[in-house]
Length: 182
Length: 238
Image (cartoon, rainbow over all chains, first blue to last red):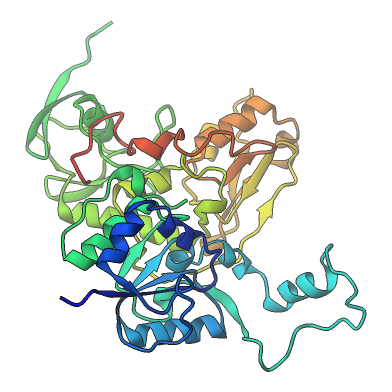
């Protein structure tokens, strides 16, 4: 039987959820026996070269590039999973949702206490740069998401159980301690 | 002193006893059965506003925290229909405010969060509103964060000064309603009162200044044991 293929991405996240995947410790050896990793920061594969079975998304969407990547994942993954608070609910990046984008940019590039030597008072506006969205959006408000793993980050146990469940088609039991929002 | 009259009722098919006048929620707890609730708190006059504790009494939906037991009453609580309604209310509360658990001092000790854990809400079924709300840190001892407030009125009902005056009140109307703290009375807020306000708040809307994150993850109230386990052991995988 062909090994299931996994792709992962970190959008508006902190890579903590990817770290939590690594937190399954020695089970990572079992995991690479069970699956192949395709496009992912772990493999450094930048473009989809094949269809994947499972896509793991960390982080919500805060700019146009996040939306592009997420749509690309939806197109190329049979099952898409929101991993972690930011992907599921917007998370900490969404703390800016009550602040107008202009104010955020001014704080970051003009008025913030750590701003240094921006004498021409330039806000980044190169065409190559992704556009900042008006708000940070949870992934399921941009594309259809099939499963949700809460946590900041989701406990390694939860990620492991969910992956095994998806790969083997088994019903999973998630202990109370592993189901958290923080 | 007269003995309180004992009356009988049925809760989810179990024969239960109650003292006359006892509310369904309290009587259930006395019989070892947990009915989920949020705006209710022991020692504070019940209010029946969050509707989480809604049960069916003789087939009709009633709030268990404000409905006294009557002889022969038949109550349903732990049913698929009612639990899904509870879940929906929790999800609505979640999307209606700005509940960023990882950034909240109350995380792990929050009753709203504990309920979504117990009901296993992986994601709310409703769209996030991300309302624009403010945070008021003008009081020297207490931070009031309207992003997290669920308007349960527990602080209004539970915090009074020595003369019995309310320190908290609602101000404004409709979807703009928010908790206000009497600036004059609250100017003399003691550390004890600030702590009491924080403890009374089921979420992280009232936070004592220079406090928070002082209990490590793993040792907080709802880290290991689900809410309601003080009344009833949850069934496996609930």
